[in-house]
Amino acid sequence: MDKRYVKLIEALAQIRERTSFVPKVALVLGSGLGGYARNMEVEAEIPYSEIKGFPVSTVQGHDGRFLFGTVSGVPVAAMKGRVHYYEGYDISDVVMPARLMGLMGAKVLFLTNAAGGIDLSFSPGDLMLIRDHISSFVPSPLIGPNIEELGTRFPDMGKVYDPEIRELVKRVAAEEGIDLKEGVYLQATGPQFETPAEIKAYRLLGASAVGMSTAVEAIAANHMGLKVLGVSCISNMAAGILDQPLTHAEVQETADRVAAKFEKLVTGVIKELGEL
Image 1 (cartoon, helix red, strand yellow):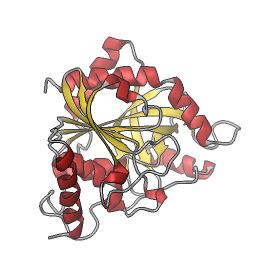
Image 2 (cartoon, rainbow, N blue to C red):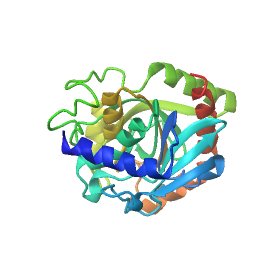
Image 3 (cartoon, rainbow, N blue to C red):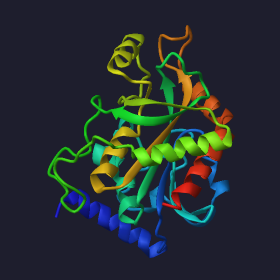
């Protein structure tokens, strides 16, 4: 049996010793959504550090724990803080949390993040529904022997971000009066911010926003047969667009400023997902 799958099964067993909770939605809380727990009726919490072999987030603003509970009556497993490839983890560890929530029973993976705006029509504070992604600049989480227990060797990636759910998100945004952009997310490795030349190249490739997470998680979830949706908070304009240096503090500040709007959208979408 593949050692990566064994690691997943062992982590699942440790969680099952603490809770029998079965989520319908797996939610990854990116920058700015660290306080989302107040929207949940939390039944159980498990810090990543208490799961043997589980990667632990080292980034400021990423707490590092699983929350299990309900949002508008919908069972949700939420990651309060994610791990990133730039933290030095193997790519299979980066996607381990997403895979684990799938094994717990989740049918939908809801990914959120903070991203730099490449599309010149965007402004800091905008929310962008991810239509597609570009993952060519990071290793695929499917490299190596295929984990047959999870999915096929050559999974189709034509509709990673479920079209039906994307329409659902747009409808919820319209009902809540939230201006929602839509575009293509590009994942870079980080941790350095991109250069102006890289941003120009990414724009030519068709990217609307850039960040350091999400695409590999979406690939792993799609491989398992989960439906995927993603929303980015445009926390800053990418390098070379504005004449100012990029800082993590700016990212966090913008994400915090629009957190209420972001939370409102996430809650509305989860409520609708419960009807699917």
